Image (cartoon, rainbow, N blue to C red):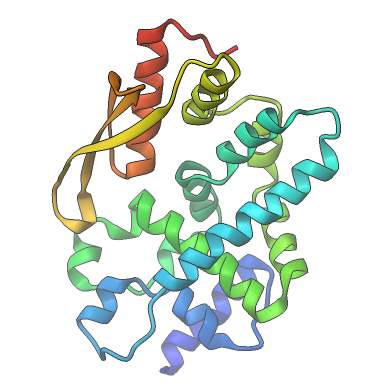
Length: 236
C-alpha cells in the first residue's frame, strides 16, 4: 500500500470517527471488485465484507428496535428494520460520509459514474460496518451505525420515509391466510455495473404484480407494491 493510499485512508478515518488497528481491513472495505480485476489477482476486495456487514447491521438494528420499541409488534419492528437495512438507507449514509471519494475502482467503472452509483456505495458501507466489527468488535460497529444512521433510524420509526411493501404484503397475506407468496425472476438485462431486473410476484401460483429495479431487492419491492395495488391492499 503506497503512501498516497495510506493518507487517503487516514483521512477517511477522521470522517468516520474510527481509527483502525488493522488498516488493511479498511483498505479492503473500500476496494471494489472492478479494481482487482485489473490488478493483482491476490488483491482483496470488499464483497465478502459486504456479506458480513449486512448481517452485522441487521443485528445492530434488531437489538436497537427490540430495546427501544417495547410496545411494537414483531411485524412492525420487521418493517422498520427493513426500511433501515436496505440500499436506499445505505446510499444516504454513503453520501453523508463521502465514501464514494475513497473507493478503489477500475478506470472503466469510474468513467461510467461508479463513484455515485447507489449499489456500489451501499455495498461499501456494509463492507465498512463489517470491517469495523472485525477490527473493534460489535460495540464499535454499533457506535458507528447509531451515529451515522441516527436520522434514518428515527425517520423510519416515525414512518417518515419510504415503505417496505414486501414485508407489509407478507404480513398481510399471512395474517389473513391468503396463500403463499413467491417472487420469480423474469429477466436480467444490462452490464454488471448497470443491471435491470424484472420480477413477478405470484400468490398461490397466480401472478398478481410485476416490478423492475436496479437490484433484485428493489424489483421485489416494486412487484410487491404493484401486487398490493391489484389486490386492493392499503398500507395503513
